Amino acid sequence: MTSSVEEWVDEVARTTHPDTVIWCDGSDAENGRLIGQMVDDGTLIRLNQAALPGCYLHRSNPQDVARTEHLTFICSERPEDAGPTNNWMSPADARERVWPLFSGAMRGRTMYVVPYIMGPVASRCPTSWAQSPRLTPGWASRSPTARTSSPTCAS
Image 1 (cartoon, rainbow, N blue to C red):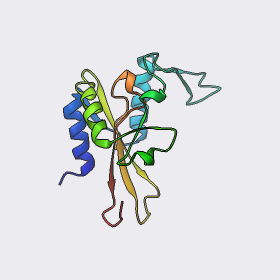
Image 2 (cartoon, rainbow, N blue to C red; image 1 turned 30 degrees about the vertical axis):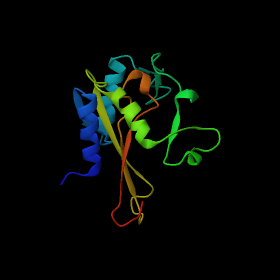
Image 3 (tube, helix red, strand yellow; image 1 turned 180 degrees about the vertical axis):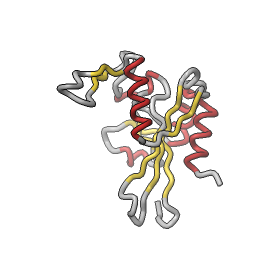
Image 4 (cartoon, helix red, strand yellow; image 1 turned 120 degrees about the vertical axis):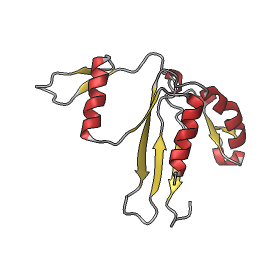
């Protein structure tokens, strides 16, 4: 049986067309592999490992953009839910306007899926999430996220 998170990842992959989809597992081996790749491609710079073991310098990609208020919206059913200082858009309008911009955004790239749980694992109501960061260089702060709630808890 496919979970709602797996369905969401499949939908994102069908739209964005990544070359590869990798589900992150948080293991030491994965961490070492990712650090090695980033050091090799210059994304990370090893600092003095004798003085600062396990430390690296990471500089932001100049193509990444900071959050721009005029392009940031709170998407909810009711405009008043956005608060007095935020831009508002209905979820339906957001899907119609924004989702097409993701078409083909991952061609030539790897999509990393980062699963995580909000709250304690042993909680009566844990909520599982997965995030696919960095769809395109200019979308660093606009990553879609999927959520599944525990069947024993109300969302």
